Image (cartoon, rainbow, N blue to C red):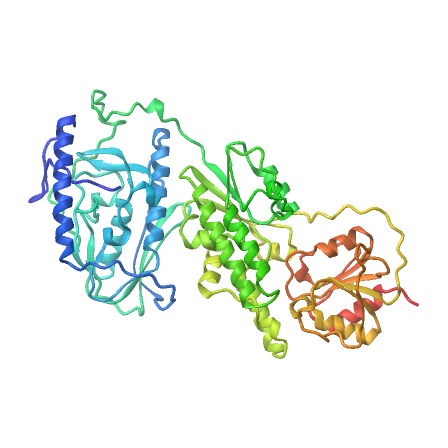
Length: 593
């Protein structure tokens, strides 16, 4: 908890005066003293040259020098539930400001300089604070759990403690009982230390714990840890309205007005897939929250046409979504510029929708495109998370493409679509943290077998049409690019003398198909007319919609497992980008002349 020093405590010997019922007068005197202390500290800090240390995403701090793990949920009483949610929200916000901060050797770290003032406009909410011997509601309440954890890690790491203050009251189960606590109160009660070696602070929340680690460049044992200050006598227990029995106190809270609240779910979605649309419709409750890029029905954009009825609250990132759409349309169809537009657009949408994550949101169902940004910025810790996955994890996707580049260095497009390493790492951490992975993509589900929910792909409805399949007619569910298996398709078409209906752009450049017979579709023409098989031996594939359409129409499909289709009638699975395997499969599927 954020804690204001108790004016009844003799800090010279930690002797505790008898507790007295707070009143308006004593509180006014207390507030006046706090104002004086804050002013004095403000001017004294002007001469100290304190720094707010920068963050670093470098992984050059492999050794753990000190660690603290403390429970998030420490009070299970129903009347305290809202304050526990507030405390966790404050820890979530402060940990995000602290995570990955690098403190140089011999320099001073200041808790308040690094975190800043805990006010509502910065995302802090009401938790419990220790003041005048009582646990009272206050904005930023609960941050002493973080300062306690930092102090513990600093002691383990051999840091020199420059400033530290003990709590004036003990809360059951807190570090104050063991004398390894460090209270803080803006700005005059601070925690400051000086590390003997450059270290990086790792701060994050699991579903149940606050985790603080100090990391160094090597596992060299630091100097002997500084001992915690001894406690000369037992501390008086902190009081609360539930324990003191003083109903006449001006701060008394009738608990009947604070009923226990159940947690809510926030569904933060991106592009509308029909499989996810049905899942969200089944999973949400009337008290839940929906965050979407924009209202697709209002803007006449089917890509974002989510059903918005049945939610207690809705929010959108309309300007950010429109800006992303424009940037992607202006970018080249292939290459780093397009990838940058996609990633930057998703980041801006995520930041906007993060405003919907109020303290009472205990579960988040989030689109994969938004996931790494929300994780990196600390919005998901302390919450249950499930992910609506549309593609392979970035680490796996890039590893597959890297192997393909190594095998075929002449295929330049295989080197496109790479994300910054820090973003790849953030997504990997978030996926490991998530309790559930929701996807219709069979290959993605296999990667997360223990926690995957595999949805059924929705096949489009098609009317029965009599099509005369040509023995040598196939369709390639492109576009024409290496990662979709274009080279294997070209080689197979040459070997078997096939005619190809091609989808999308020729991203491998003009003249790619050479003397292969390629049929261009007329406007409004049935692309399956005359097609005996639809093929896609892709290395990676997110949405196999043309393949689903072909299967629904009774047309044979040959595809790699990367396309995400489960084993079924009409589907032949082949190795990705393998011309020989594709030729063998085509010989068994194509009608004999």
